Image (cartoon, rainbow, N blue to C red; front, side):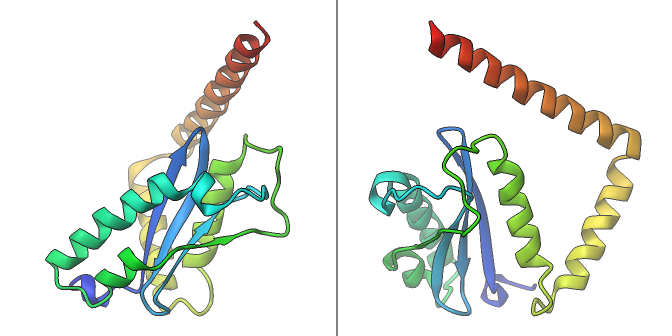
Length: 159
């Protein structure tokens, strides 16, 4: 991609209130979607508006500086919340993993003409930057920290 005008989609992973979700600006379709695993019926205004409006404003300003033709679309269009059939109201533990899997699925979908390049670059990066044992260690440490944090929160809420 030589410049932002060639951009087809922009992905922004968000974490708010210990919940991960993905905001995707689709320049080909001219829309924005919010993707996560939450299946609550909370509205855009109640759950996402504060952060998404800030993101839209900042990203739109950046695109304006670059004279991107979709800068106004980013700012003016309200996002659509994707509510997956498999969504959950209780599982707030795995939302980070689910968000990453969704982004991977989109990027590796067969209609993505950049799929092979993305896959090759990701594999090359993983091969160069981490060895197998280090990856395992990092994953185990992340799981341990997550469990400790959840246990700490359970204890505090019980007090």
